[in-house]
Length: 216
Image 1: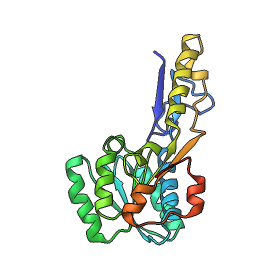
Image 2 (image 1 turned 135 degrees about the vertical axis):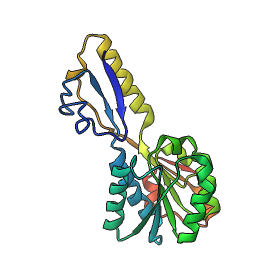
Image 3 (image 1 turned 45 degrees about the vertical axis):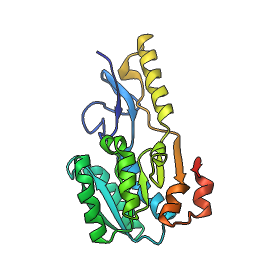
Image 4 (image 1 turned 90 degrees about the horizontal axis):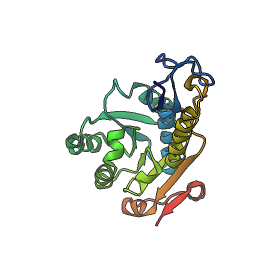
């Protein structure tokens, strides 16, 4: 049976699902999301937006599940000469206590890792971050509409179109193993100035110039 997937935190080659991106060679193909690399990029975007923040928090679900993401975030922080502290929350009921720990640790900004459970609770996380006076970067551009200061990630609508295109080509007779796995090519960046105002932040003009959407 052909399988069209979205590989979010899994390297399909390392996991044995494909022999290469250009020619998977099995019954599986789809979109590779580059989640770990993008989590590293988000730390950099957060630093550029709030350069005064030197102690950054990373929020993950667990050390095991987000191991590769955390490595990329730590690498980005080290390159920017930042201190990165990692905190874990496996469920929404843990959010209040984990934000209390962040305040106790004196963190100055927060990068939320690309976890579906976090995206599904974007408004709650954003509210906790604002109450804790933490500028936040989140996984998807639309999460800024939920209150995150910054939302940066692949164009979700485009990813869905690409997935549908795979299905169409397979129904027309294409072999999944002959369809190259694709990576995101377009990204969306949203800045929430309402959140910035609540946090007392002035967003650098160069960041606003780069944004695809600015929420005022």
